[in-house]
Amino acid sequence: MLIDYKDVELRQDDRAILSHVNLQVGEGEFVYVMGEVGSGKSSLLKSIYGELPIASGEAVVLGTDVTHLKPRMLPALRKQLGIIFQDFQLLRDRNVRENLDFVLRATGWKKKAQRQERILEVLSQVGLPDKGDRMPHELSGGEQQSICIARALLNSPRLLLADEPTANLDVENSRKVMRLLNDIRRAGTSIILSTHNEAITEMFPGRTLRCTQGKLERIEEEEIES
Image (cartoon, rainbow, N blue to C red; front, side, top):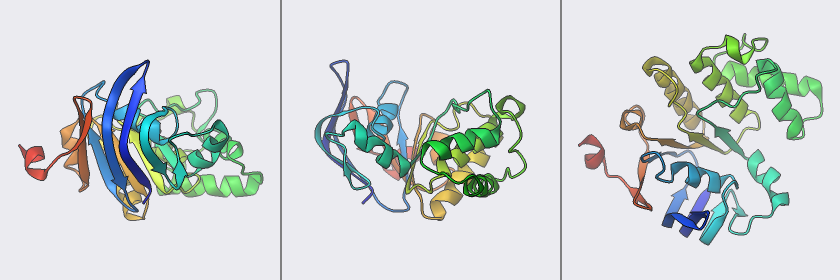
C-alpha cells in the first residue's frame, strides 16, 4: 500500500478543510480527485508530500508515518514522489536541461555523466528528446507540462501527484498529457490526479473520488455518466 489514510483531518488556519478522510492507494493505480476550486483537492495532495500537516488521524505515505512528519524526513519522502503542478514552476532563467539538472543535483546525483544520461532518458520518455537546449518561454504550454512530467520522473518515483495538470492547456494538449500519464501508470507508477473537469476522468479508466462539503467521497460510474 502506497498511501493509507484512516480518519484523517486536514486543517489550515484553524479551519477544517477535509474531515474523516479514508484513502488507500496501491501499486499501479490511477486515482482521480475531483472537486470545485477550494474544495480541498490541492490540500489533500499537499498533505501527501508533506506541505500541509495532518491535523488528526493516521496517515502513512510510502512507508513513512506522516502524521507527525519531521522536517528531516521530508527529503527522503519527496525523493520517492513526483509532483506535477498546473503552473509548471519551471525556472525561467535556465534551459530545460539545466532545469532538470538542478533537481538531480538537489536530490543527490553527484556524477554529471549520470545526470546527463538520466535527463535524456526522461526527455525521451515524454517525447521531447531534442528540447534540452530550449528555454521555457520557447515551449508551448503542452511542451512545458511534458517537461514538468519529465522532471517529476527523474528519481523514478513510485507515486506521481498531479495537481490540475491540464488546467492551463487546450483540449489537444490535455489529451497528450493524459495519454502520457496513462503510459506512465501502465509502466507501474501510481498516479493521483486532481481536477475539476469531469471530461478528464473519462479519458482513461481510474478510481474517482470527490472532495465535497469537507469530505472525500467515492464516485460511482453511474454518477459520473449522469
